[in-house]
Every structure is written in structure tokens, then in C-alpha cells.
Image: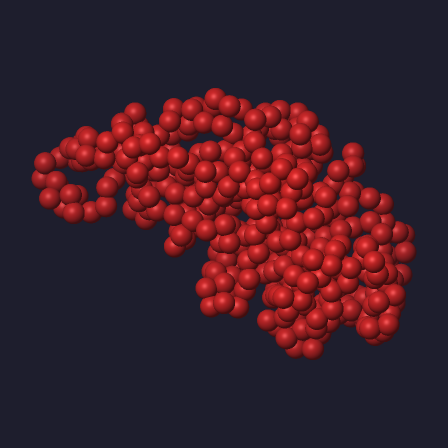
Length: 391
């Protein structure tokens, strides 16, 4: 680091040396071949990353592991992040199939969120960040060993913890969508599908924090046990129970709020289970993502009549449309987590056939694992980094 500081600071002139010397190190990227990471080991010139090379809902066909890609150099207002954990999302295969933006053609980067440390940064970015600082981000391109992140969207965090990663996409999706369209209040009934998953776990807990009666659908007794542990009043294992029958018996007046991410037959059934003036929030339809069309058919022809009869509503929610509310949501979630009022369950894949998800190579396994429906909590892949100091 001493070589870097001398070269960078001398550029600013002798008169300002005493002032700059007492401030945090500023890395002038015009001398990028000299920058070093905060452990004192040279940043490599190449890295691994995942790239979409053809459009397909089959993640393994769409995505290629590039073993020798140049490590990018951050610009003036950018950070170079060494990723330590990256999150897996059901919509990763929507992105790899080109469903979000038909104008984007392969090759392109993939991965929505990451957490790690700053290992290099541009001059203006050093006003608010420093080398070695833990940061998280929600930005495309996280499935890489190193990612460039604009400083204005990077989120300082106290520690590099996978639990904090769970809040970036899954947590904020649940928080903002329920705030905008859930109209939660004490005593309301809320049903969450895929309730033990990465986003469902937060919808359950946020609804409980609002003093609602919470129902959660899941696919195993282990998941039902997890749901009880986070406050779910009525877990329903749809593999062994008929969801419609249980709801008719337990909640004959209907459900006030449905938080839906499955689609297909589940969607049709839950629309019919809405209470008068009920709300159904669509955050996804994972049952159809692996198909060529991306969605399973629903009984849309009957939908207007069902909604009219109940004065009910259906709302779609896509997180990128609500980024003006993102920071406030994230801060609120972090506060809940730090106060012990929010559990952030992480699934590292220990129960998967080949064990824990470690390294970019395991992202493929992690995506497959998500679609088996066996995960409890947010699926996270660890990207270990072995430091070999040269100083």
C-alpha cells in the first residue's frame, strides 16, 4: 500500500501532502496497475464469472462459466468489489432466457446481488468508501469473483454476512410490495405461498409484525416446522393437505391478503379464496419459469367476474419499478434484523446432494436446487478467497 500512497498523493502536490496524509487513502486509478487489496496481496489480472451466452430458461444451457476474464478497473465514481456471497433468485432463469428485456442479446452478465469488500475504487468514490470496507449491492453481474459497482448504489454494511444478503432482493421485495399493496392491519388474514423460501420468509414475518393472522403454504414437514418457528399461525403442507379444503374449513370468510409467487393452478385457487375487498399480490409465478413460455395458463376468463363479485384486486409487483423506495425499505429491514425482530434464514446447500454451494461453479447446482423446492430460506453461494500476501 505504501507504493500506491506515494504515487497517488504526489500527484496532488507537495502543499497538500500534510492534509491528505491524515485522510483515508485515495486510490487514483490512472495508476491502476499499482493498486493492491486491503490484505496486501495483488489483485489478480483475471477472474472467473458467469455469462449468458445463449437465451434459454435452462440455466445450464444459457450460462457459461468464463474461467479467464480480465478483472475490471473501476472508474472515478466506482468500486471494485471482491464478492464473498451471491444470492440465487428464481428469476435468474427469467433473466437468462431474455424475458426482462428482449433488446438485450448475449453475451451478458448475470446475478442480481452480492456482498463483499471494496478492493479498489475511483478517486471520487473514495469520499465515502475505503479499501477493505464491507459493502452489499443489488446490481446485475454479481455472478463473478469481482464486480464493478457504482458508489452511489453500494450499501455499506457492518460485516460481510450472508444474512444481510438475504435482505437485498428478497427482503425488500416483501417489504415494499406489502407496504404498497398489502394494506396490512391488526387482525387481517394473510396467506403466503412458498412461505419458507427466500422471499416468503420475510412476507410471513412482516405480516406477523403487523399483527396479522398468517397462513403459509409449503412442501414438507421440515418447512412447516420452520414456518412455525418464525411465527406462522397456520402452515399448510400442500403435498399432504388440500389447500382449498383447509382454507374453507379454517378461514370460511376468505383471505384478506394473498402473497403469491407460484402461479398456475395455485393462483386460480387462491383468487377464489379471497375475502371481500381482498388483495392478491403477484411477485412471481415460479411454476412456469422453466417452460418455453415462462408461465403456466390460468383461468383468466373468469378473473373479472371473481374480482367484481368480491370487490377484490390483483396487483403485480416488480422490484425495479420501486427503486425510489429501496433504501428506506432496506434500512427498515436492517433495523428489524439488528433488533432481533427479523430472522434471515440462509440455505447454503448443505442438504443438497453434493453439499454446500461454494465457488462460482456451484451456482449451477444452486439454481437446480431452488427448482427442486427443497430450500428453506434464501439460497446463497459462498465465493471463498484465499489471501496470499506478497508484502
